Image 1 (tube, one colour):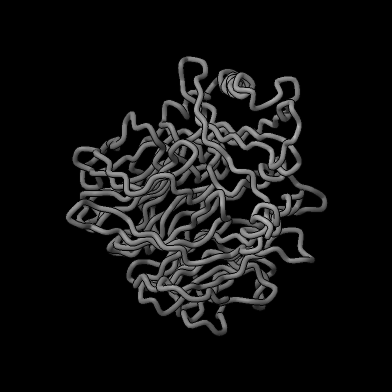
Image 2 (spheres, rainbow, N blue to C red):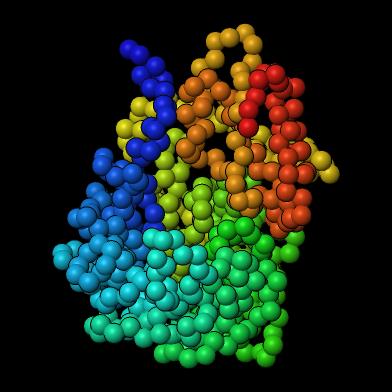
Length: 500
């Protein structure tokens, strides 16, 4: 009988594009079901197409909730577990090929278009009382494409709508751009990360404010010099927690956890994690209003833990748990007893996982359960070269975390050639996962691959991420060269044959 590895096939160019990938996971308020977007390859389409699926947290086969020609996204459970709001493109009359807001029963069936926005909608969230749905929509007319007219970007405005009424109501003025928002627990207000200009450059110097849910002026709360993300109200609405740092891409970050008092005039945000050696990315308050559940980038993996507001102590619940290449977050029940997320390993691409937070006599922990197996063919037939987590010293004595992937097969007496794969951003990080688009393809073709989280990456704290500011192509490039030297000195790669 042949061994498992002998029956596997190399990962050829395009093989990773055949994977089915989950996105936008949302746990029902009762913790019984998870809706998610399944991104699937379609033979006659240039990119994956999104459909909404659901799976029970007790197990069983996932099942589709939407079908047809539309591109579906952003599924959100109603607070009473009875309905699912979502966004779909090219469904219903009057949509004009713009993504619009739909509602459907949690049991499936026909979806109903709630309203028609001339520029479509994005970023849905139900109010906690279930009486409104908030969303973002671009302002103004779409620029003409023929001839090409170069105009400033358009503002992105926050709106709300009542589920049984077809006229949306603006929640913010038309001269602001809302990048992120969060409902207050009593559904009366919305916290915003916003800017007075509509461009990405304006996002870099946005501020946090509060607007009435029924519409009105935005009350600015901060004078931030860095970006903010992952806004989270405390249960009594007296404080806002958020993540802040200096990042390269809108609405994606890892930095420090701050708390801002809403009861004091001109209060300054308080940093709960100064000097911490990983990069928190998302947070949510426990019902006691004293602790925060967080996720964070940690070296070449991610972690989940608890942060105590009073003394900034952290308790790690799980380490080495890769959730997302973009933004590691959890979808939780209101009591934070359970959550849903995605998880990938070297052995399997991203799947849905369910977690239960257990408070026992020996401390707090997490029970984790896999809910889906979206790519059994890839798991069982792809020939995968195992990656090794390595660490080496670079300039200034800083330690660099990296992943080294040898060729799938190498029969020569000389070491293999090396490809240095550099992540963009620069604020981002390589993760110890299934290998992404290129790593396993290159390994199958006979190359070794180095993926280094050079300075500027997340996972080592704010000072490490900040070290690239004003020095891109400087010491970060030296981090790469030192990684190559590390591998050459150990005879793992050929120092005369490498590419970037």
